[in-house]
Each structure stands twice: as C-alpha cells, then as structure tokens.
Image (cartoon, rainbow over all chains, first blue to last red; front, side):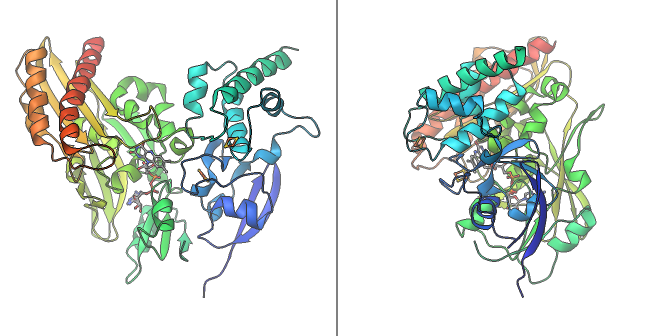
Length: 162
Length: 289
Ligand SMILES: Cc1cc2nc3c(=O)[nH]c(=O)nc-3n(C[C@H](O)[C@H](O)[C@H](O)COP(=O)(O)OP(=O)(O)OC[C@H]3O[C@@H](n4cnc5c(N)ncnc54)[C@H](O)[C@@H]3O)c2cc1C
Ligand code: FES
Ligand code: FES
C-alpha cells in the first residue's frame, strides 16, 4: 500500500514537519501541503526559475527536488527574505525600479539574487546576468531587474559600512 | 507523476541491492534535473527511485597525484568552485559551468549527465577528450569503462541491470597539455548544444604528441572522433594540421536535422567548433608549458 512519508526539515530557520508522497516535488510540498505559496510554479521543468529556493546553501529549482529529499536539510524561501516588517533591500529595489509587472517570476528572482549578494558584495552586470540566466521573465525585459539587483547591492554595501 | 517509492541508501552495496530488485523498474536519482523531468513527462518510468546522494563514494571529489576522482553525484558547482581543480582541468570547467544555469548547476551531476546518455550532453565530449574512465559497481562486482564506450544509444548507457556509476576518473594532466569544450547555441546559457566540441592535446614543443577530439549533438551518442585526433599526432601545430583534423571530424559526424539546425548546418559547425576547441586547447597547453 502506498503510504506517505514523514519529513522533518528546517524552513526559514524554523523546524517544520510534513507528510508527503515520494513523488511530490518540494515545490508542491511548500505550496500545497505547507501553504507557503510565495514560491511560484512557472514551467515545472527546471527552466523558468520561478520556484527557486535555497536548499542546503545552494539555489535550486524546487520543482526538480523531491519533498522527501528535504529530510534533515535547510531551506530558505521568499517568505524568509523580509526582515520582520521591513522589506529586504532587494524587495525595496524591485519596487522602486519597477522590476516586476505580473510578479510571477519575482520571488524566484529575489531568492536567486539574494544568494548572489550574500556571497558577492559587488557583482558586475555580466555576473548578475549569468547568475540569473536560470530565471525567466516574460514581462520586464530583464533590464529593470538587473538595475534593481545593482541598486540592492549598493544599498546592502552602505548598510554594511554603517 | 506516477506513484513511486523512494529509498536513500548510505552505501554502494545497499544501492546496488535496491537497483537489482527483481521485477521492479528502479532508477537512480542524482540531481534529478533529467530524471524528474522525464518521469513527469512520462518519458521514463520508475516504481522505485533510489537517491544516491547520501553515499560517500558518490560525493567524493579528490585531486591527487593520480588525477581527479569525481563521485558520480557531485554537482557541477562543487567542481568549478574548487580552485585547484579549475587550474588543472580548465576544459572540464568549460563544460560544467555551462550546464543549465546557477540553479541547475547546484544539482546536476556529471554522473547524471553521462548516465542520461543524451547525444547533446555537454560534459561528455570533454570527458572523452580527457580520456576519462567510468568506475561502476554492480551485482557482479566493480569494473571500469572508457567514457567513449559508456553511451550506447540515445538515452541508453552501458550499465548492466543493477549497476551503479560510482565515479569518474581523469588522469593527472601531462605537462604541455591543454583541453577545451565549446558549444554552439543561440543564447549563452540555458539551451541545448546545436554542436559541441571537446578537444585535448599534449604538445611536445610545437608538435602534437597526443590529441583527442569528441563532439556533442552530431550523432546518436556523444561522438569520439578518434581519427581526427590521431591525424594530429606528430604534426606541427598550425592551421594546416588543425584544418585537416576538423575535416576528418566533419566526415565522422552523422548529424540529423531538427528544430535546432539542419544536418548540413551541423556538419559545417563540426568543422568550425573542432577548430575552435583545438585552438583553445593549444593555447592552454602553451600556457602550462
Ligand atoms: C533547465 C535545464 C537546463 C539544462 N541544461 C543542460 C545543458 O546546458 N547541458 C547539458 O548537458 N544538460 C543540461 N540539462 C540536463 C541535465 O541537467 C544534465 O544532463 C545533468 O547533468 C543531469 O544530472 P543529474 O544529476 O540531474 O541527473 P539525474 O536526473 O538525477 O539522472 C539522470 C539519469 O541518469 C541516471 N543516473 C544518475 N546517476 C546515476 C548513477 N550514479 N548510476 C546510474 N545511473 C545514474 C538516472 O537514473 C537518470 O536516468 C538541463 C536540464 C534542465 C532541467
Ligand atoms: S517551475 Fe520550477 S523552474 Fe519553472
Ligand atoms: S514580471 Fe511577469 S514574468 Fe516577470
């Protein structure tokens, strides 16, 4: 008899447990089981990056990770980005630069860009574009997204200097 | 996706036991960037998925005097983030840093790239050019196989039932050696090679002492163009020898026409990409001399 698997994991620093079927993706587990709908589904095949989360320190497309693989791992999602009621500099920069229209790609871009800024203070435009090549946007034309990431990098640098 | 069971063994023996389960369709899971897409699309079936990422040997990444051992489940980013490996094997780095984008590179393994046996697999030509070997473990014990003999048909590899790819081994680079991988695609990232070319050379002064060339997306499997490489041995480095090798590589290709290009276009690109890969490999060989 097929039975569900019990998964114990950490999401945005909090211990979390859930039951899922082995065939369910981490994306499905986040959205449909845990109700964490900030992570989006675009293509469900690894191409669009809308489902990007940090999985044990690396960004991955959560549609290509099984929920059962989360056992014992650390996961960060878009829900963990804001600092309490204050937006993260990336979120603020996306708003100020109109780096989103429909918004379906935005959580993925922000999670991916944050992973870059967490490891590199001042990435070049080329570096940003290559880092984000696994994230697709049908609305903005990318330029505003790249500007927003550059602005957030500058703001984060100032904050760190203070 | 259809229902499947999931196991996450800790040892090679346990994995082989699970992969050999009689009467079950069992699939190894490394990064899942091919397998989960295929299971979801119904292109492959499994009633048991064996996650191999918790097995020590499959996570090993070791550079020593014998060369480089890459556990089959090691994701691309671990390879290009290692400065010593990047210095010793720049041709391998070319390939692992252009598989997918950042997210895919966080998961995709060389073992999966090989075992999936796509003609377009970007890591395979350079592994063939570098003379890499696959180390496998199965119910009948361990064995090893040259990478050029591993892919046998589109989507089919040389693994026997129950067999697991454990690691890939590349010999230490000889002095005066250089390698490169290049692919031709319509955009810089996130697409499948129209044609890819991997080349590895060992130079003795200005003469080719060794040369190996392999191509992606021009035949049912990654293609080892042995004669193209052999034609260079003993010849002086220069346009004439490089062009002659590129012509032989072109003749060895058996490309098809699909949405990414016609057979004729691909054949033309074989020559172009072989020349470019050789030129870059030669430049690297001269740098290390
Ligand atoms: C968006 C996207 C972009 C991509 N871009 C590229 C690209 O640019 N170039 C490219 O070459 N590929 C690309 N791919 C394909 C894929 O990422 C690579 O082939 C990758 O290397 C597969 O590795 P994996 O660890 O994810 O394999 P998995 O999906 O885990 O496994 C692939 C196959 O190999 C088998 N397998 C895996 N490991 C073993 C083992 N140790 N022993 C026996 N069998 C095993 C599995 O059962 C499965 O059949 C892309 C995929 C996606 C989704
Ligand atoms: S939904 Fe996962 S990459 Fe598109
Ligand atoms: S804002 Fe609509 S897809 Fe990016």
